[in-house]
Length: 489
Ligand SMILES: Cc1cc2nc3c(=O)[nH]c(=O)nc-3n(C[C@H](O)[C@H](O)[C@H](O)COP(=O)(O)OP(=O)(O)OC[C@H]3O[C@@H](n4cnc5c(N)ncnc54)[C@H](O)[C@@H]3O)c2cc1C
Image (cartoon, rainbow, N blue to C red):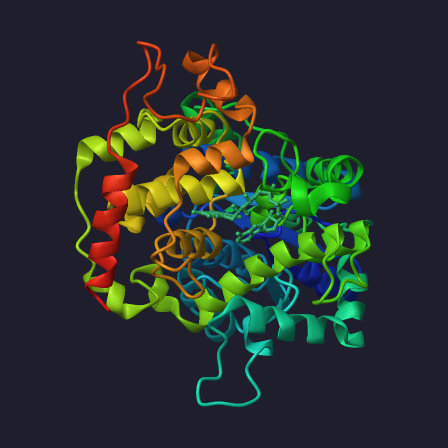
């Protein structure tokens, strides 16, 4: 049996420009088998989202079609990776056809780092198979950006981080990386599971493919209609954004009633698309830190994503605690009825309610509105960011630990480079500024359809009977919030 490789897919659901897959397809002339493990540990997490999982399964289905088009095969099993690899490798061992190597692209969440160490040790020590990993999910990995001077080697603030990120970005090694990772052509793959089993299909029946089982199980539980998923759909979203919104991104991105942003977060999350592909397609290679163009402003948003990964890797405690330890002592309120009103979009603050209803209806929310609703939960309702973070994770199809945690801690002023605590978003003014005609509000809060621009964001005024009065007074709650934070110094 000729040597071959198994590529373990995780958040890199595409064939083209897939770093570790590219490495293995080249080394083994296409003799690469794809594997995906549906991990019961992830399905049982408190922040599990049926809609996000449904979207992920659709991306996996699209990946399978990509495999079929090249001649290779993707095996989807529903075991955690340790058990899954033990089963797969044991079957292969029985058939005398163990792979020479196993490849994957690196993941940076604390849970994934531990898991990957265990799987590496299993493959190497128990089965004598080498593991090869590559960078794919991020363009510049957390260990590559450390401060050159000072006692604390890790950046805690976005601007110096971004300056240093852009310095490295200009270097040939990173520009070469972009070229290598942005290929649109999938590698040629040829290996099939049945070929590995040969004529003696011993134990093979123990490994039924589970993709269709999970798709049919999840479909009836979905509460939204999913957008198209997979690398082709992601490329189409990217092309549409390039044509429609990139040239006005710096301004347009702040207005939720326009289609001013890319909506690529869900694809970047699953790896149906990478930052390198986005950079190459939008021709962002020459963007520089000081520039204020629409293109650079877009790239800087992608750098926020890399910044929050950097924070998560170097300060993994943020997953459970405030980045700034002093705010661990904040006395948050429980107030379940207010929390429920917030989740249902029934706070009486139109822009907040529109955002929360958009989340429920689409599994996505505009960034400006994410900031507004997060500020409202933490500083108007005085409810812990952790509850908001978990609710977002349960509902967002782009829900991603690093950016979600970063966004929530930013809004709650407890985070790495936060909004100062004394800057409390006024939902009425935010609405008037960023949704001046009230189009966004009317789309998601039809009860307010009849109100004109003058009253649409005014909580309580000219309120129709079927829309709630404001559940709190913003002015009053702001004073309480300031006193809560300022007590801690
Ligand atoms: C409270 C809160 C929670 C958030 N939770 C998530 C989350 O779970 N997953 C997620 O991907 N983003 C999250 N964000 C960041 C941001 O809101 C989304 O990335 C963005 O709205 C996605 O829409 P888009 O792709 O159209 O963005 P675009 O404006 O088109 O931006 C392009 C890409 O840049 C990145 N990006 C943009 N803004 C940010 C940001 N502020 N922080 C980090 N990356 C950014 C995303 O990858 C995004 O796809 C959160 C922000 C806040 C304030």
